[in-house]
Image (cartoon, rainbow, N blue to C red; front, side, top):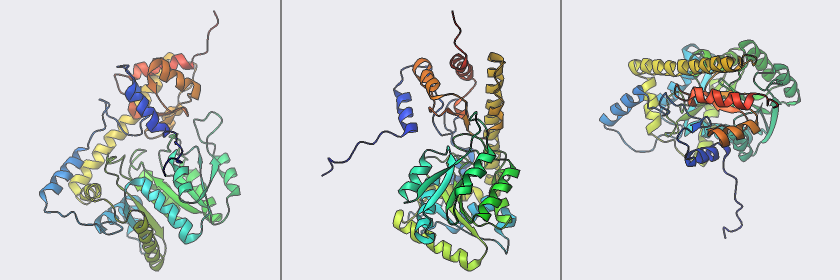
Length: 402
């Protein structure tokens, strides 16, 4: 019965990670993995998370089902985090949130709801985008279109290309937006470009989905929410899909949310009902533990402050690693401009490495990265950054004739 199933190729990222694990080189380096790593190359558990878990263990809890859309205190926590207190409590803006198993589930819920409830047939996303984005929305029954994003070097934004590409978007299409720390490139629009893009979205009557997977990894929790808050303040309605995998380090717990922002109480109530009915047919109820951790931290002033401090330390370390990498590469290749690495934000960077050069780095130096040139800056540390820069210099240097 099952013999007719074709064999799918492995996921590009997880496939490379499998190759990395099998590599016997003791000095192998993984710049592929999409998780934060500390100076020891480990993905740490935040101290505030440990404290929250301890408190939860000491409480007399229950393992009964959560509501379909999650616990109310969790919903309020993510709504305030995304919108800020002023917008969240505004009597002109109405938001509803639901707890989802990670950001991936929230993205899929958004796609299912847009197709089923609003008749959306097509979604626009940047070229490039996270490799799973098109798969998620094709699986939800939407046609995927791409809008241009990167400049000719592939390391910065070409905003004219963005707006020109979107001239073909039709009223009722959806558009997926990386709110901050664009994955895979690290290249974000400026505040002025976000304003123009928001105006274009409203003029063309598109359904925006803000993928907010990296709040706090760009500049700050507040600043990173600017694209969403500016869009809402200018009169736009939106869906926001957020994740706590990165900014809480809760990768394995699968904690995220979907938030709809609109301008009428009745509309918000109707949207909440549609989100719940969509969830009911997909996974029925969200998982308990990770959401309880997030809710405990966000709703306790002491833990909230500790979380913000830990998150800031992570952000500062990534910025410092970018600077170290640029300085080391400029020392080795003074005629090559690496300043674009400093303008990119978050864990990921489009390094300028070609697919062929990535193959050489893997095969000859045991440095693993995607063939797109994406590297995880957080995969660097003081013990390996010199070897990374030496290897990059060799593959980037022109071949000298004998």
